[in-house]
Length: 243
Image (cartoon, rainbow, N blue to C red):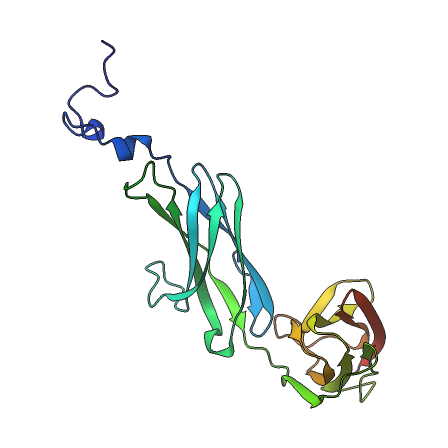
């Protein structure tokens, strides 16, 4: 008879009682990919939270947030769940941080629940913590709906005033319901700020930009590219910031 690993009896084999569920269950491991260390996310915009599975498949992965930043993960806030994550694949969950979750030292926790080895078996679980990251309050004064009439087409107006210092107003019209976004880029294509990114109903809207980037820092004087996207269309205008 071939000896069991580590001799017999031993804790792994239950001192004479074989724990079939523990023996057959795959080893579960997970790691948080995003948010990464030092990352800065903004309230009111869509973010992608990611955890990668190692060995073992997960029946579900639950995401929680802590605003304290401590490793003990105090006062967890449940954000949501993604299901059916295969081994060596990524669990991804999209979320919009509300103003109430703004924090300078936040952490994300992903809890993976394994697939039971057989019906009635207790699934294994594993938790992974992110490094600390920031959730910055969006200082744009929100998006206002100015007219509910359905526009004939998707349009992007010129910002006013232009040039501006320190705040400018941007009007855009959504003709079809669905996701839309208004973003600011540098002239060389670097993303400076996402002003709004969410589903819209048809209508005329206005959003303001305070001349700051994603980390809340004032931008330098110069020309920037204003971009609006909706329904597969993309519109751009040039705007000028003065300091």
